[in-house]
Image (spheres, rainbow, N blue to C red):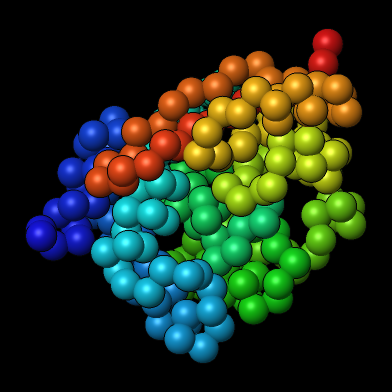
Length: 217
């Protein structure tokens, strides 16, 4: 198998995302640090760099272009990554979009500590982390709240929707588009699905999609 950096550039090319040498180095440093911290702090169930490269980095890179397209025209983009864990996709978004402000929120302190460490190690002034349950957060609303790990669309909207500004979006990274979840969302919340798109993650043999939610009306 090719070197991780070769695979990273190839994956970015497949996803239509330009990536600089500095960004590639930062992404690889990030998963190397995650692997190191993982021995003590259990940040992820994945143990080796190859798995992390595909299931964490490539998976997170797959939303970069769709997010840029959806948020085009906004001046300073503010993003919350909810239930971020060790910073996925938030750290990747911060590396790839230096003009965006990205805050990774998680209820587990060791995970937000790791993201804070990555902000320093990778010199990402646009990356922050917050150890808090999302429903207790009081900071101003943002343009996008994204999550890669929330249980259901209705739960995601109920807990995180209050943190989205009037013209903003919820973005749910999912394995499948499940109509029952969509029905529950639209029945129980003020949110609706405005679109969804299939994500083709390089080297990953699994279904992935990105579901866009906005307030009704």
